[in-house]
Image (cartoon, rainbow, N blue to C red):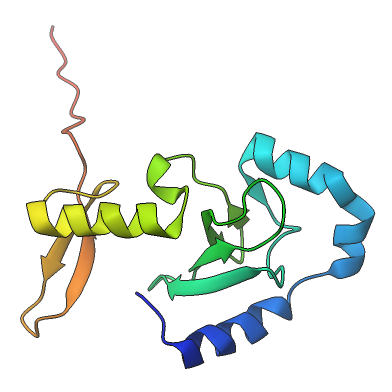
Length: 141
């Protein structure tokens, strides 16, 4: 769910309260290398240069990376348990790429990353998770 400027400021203030600069300084470049290699980092959760731009109904956020490193401009998922997650799909490479993927999904009525755009009876848009294929296994005897 996209956030207003007021919501972004409030979420940023809340999230940065969880950032442990001492731990981040201690881990240094190793934390960044692990993030690039493993795809997630609890050390980066709440980093002041990761700006929340949308929220997930489950409590997570979509954050825009403004750190001066290689991921500047990239979009990540952030949530309290896993920390910051670097999603590899090309639509996460930038905010314009993500917005284009969302617009294409809406226009074509096609799933976006396994989620279908659905409008409820109150004309609100939400994303309904739909399995992409039926995973039933047939057993022959």
